[in-house]
Image (cartoon, rainbow, N blue to C red; front, side):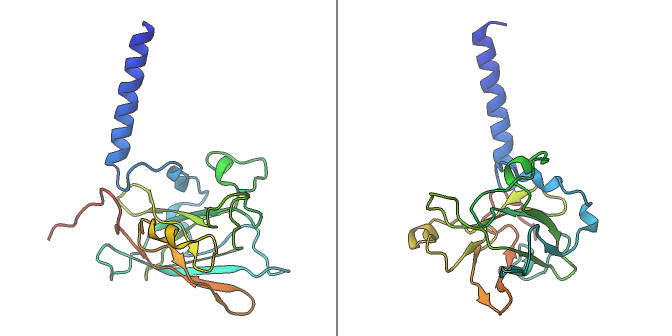
Length: 211
């Protein structure tokens, strides 16, 4: 095949793949397939997760909890899978050297939870730091997998008291799944915050329920 023919084929395939990504619920989502890399089946995942490296020795862990609601904004959504990952307290995605798949980029501070019958979830971790020499606020990435829908990302967890979370950055947030800004409360031995998640809110291509 001539070089020109190869280039045409490449652009056709790229266009088809791009179009397919655009049609998915949530649109293109690099790395979202990492939600399938858990070693425990979805059905057996707990609603409470203790992330790697959590300790109370010289540290004050962070606990985040909330309710996941269906698209109506009021019905708790059971059996929803949440995949979260973030940097360590130096702003890096730490590796142990034996990572596979998306773990090579996301690092080992990651985990999976499944909402319980009341739509509740909770995870405990150490508060991540922002990337070194950057002005992006510290954040926790999150991917959602509903039953019968493909996986998609929602707004990252952000911290209301983060000085890097400026008014301009707040204004540019998409609020996918609702606001991801968490207000933390010091409860002594740890900090706690709450974020409720609203499935389908500001999510492209989300199926509209017919009355």
